[in-house]
Length: 332
Image 1 (cartoon, one colour):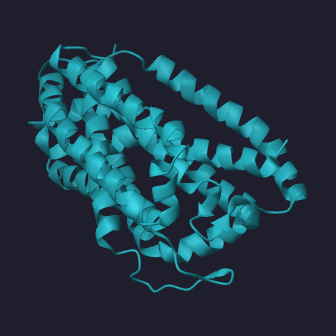
Image 2 (cartoon, helix red, strand yellow; image 1 turned 180 degrees about the vertical axis):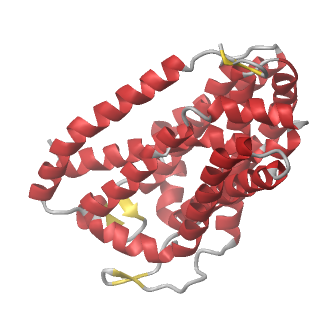
């Protein structure tokens, strides 16, 4: 067994688990000002309140796993994205405080509504900017970051940030379609249709931009015979997009959310195709960044216990809160 490859997939799984699980509750916060009156916002927040903090477990697992198993990558990547990471953490902090305090006040509720919205938008934008910074390449000298403080601020990284914000908003809207009733669900469905158009435009724009950032990216997607190996990704993406719009326009409640998730997963697979076997393209491979094999084995023992437990309690939480949320009775 190639432990380095196994760990690369474990961390990749943790990252995509965070994106698809925390993405919809960040998206709910992004939509917060556009849901109507405070009762609609109460319903929206109640739909994610029981599960939002558990979703962020995957972020800790992904970041901690990168630090422990690929220390060189962590040491290079973190200085390159300190600014967006700080913004993301502050955004998540604002959201957490808003979750706890919003229902404790009436006069100051508007303040926590604004905090929830700003925290959600800033966290999503920061995640997209950090991703864009990694995709566009990080300047390295030997085994250390050689760039400046503002290297993360580029047109591509900003475009990626907006794409993630729009994508999370679609996840949030389709989540509310699936989990709420009445006015909230109707408003969310209308927003999901419009936002899905912008999400596909953003996804298409970023996807077409990426191959021109690195020659290796371009060759992976357009050189023969690699072109035929990766062709299923855009084909399945087209099917997922059709499924998303068809389900939204025909009144389906569950399929829009999973169609939107499929688009995120396929986009993530596309990024993985560009990267492999690099963890910091085009300079550092997963093998160059990996910790010693003994460390990987030691950590794998803990992960083999921890990850199944996280999956079990996550599945149990979603099973317990599997119904819809009403205005007066919460989950039912």
